[in-house]
Image 1 (cartoon, rainbow, N blue to C red):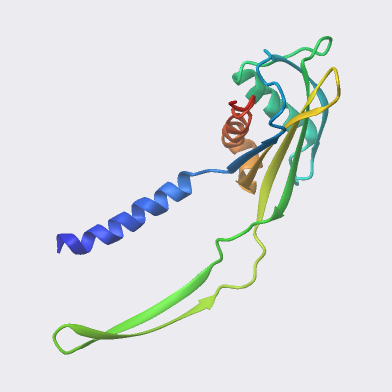
Image 2 (tube, one colour):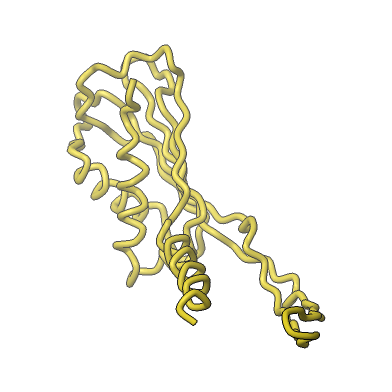
Length: 180
């Protein structure tokens, strides 16, 4: 009996871990770039939001909090790098919804026969948020680094869940500068 409980408990634990994974964070940069410099000062180059109910000034404030938490400081007069940030929505990938049913009938002492089926719960297009951050060298105007966080639930852009979005931005910006 105990062995029969292990598999459902393992499946539940894996589902909980997947739910806590949060947004997917990625980065892209030119490997020839010298990231050993002490970049601490930034200024804004641009910000935009296409997420309904979440305007560009609020996105910028959220990003400023995340940059401050990473140790960067706003320095419009003498920045090391410039920040562009964009938030947008897109159709979510994966994670379709369906309903399944199966029936198992015992046959003999050790065998069984199963009958099963499933039905898709509609072709609803689920939306997710994506944040893209570009960091450009202030002096040369050359793009240094691009980071993105995708798979952000749109509810994380609501005022009551600002801390979730803050953590996603902090995870994203923690990748800069990349380790060499």
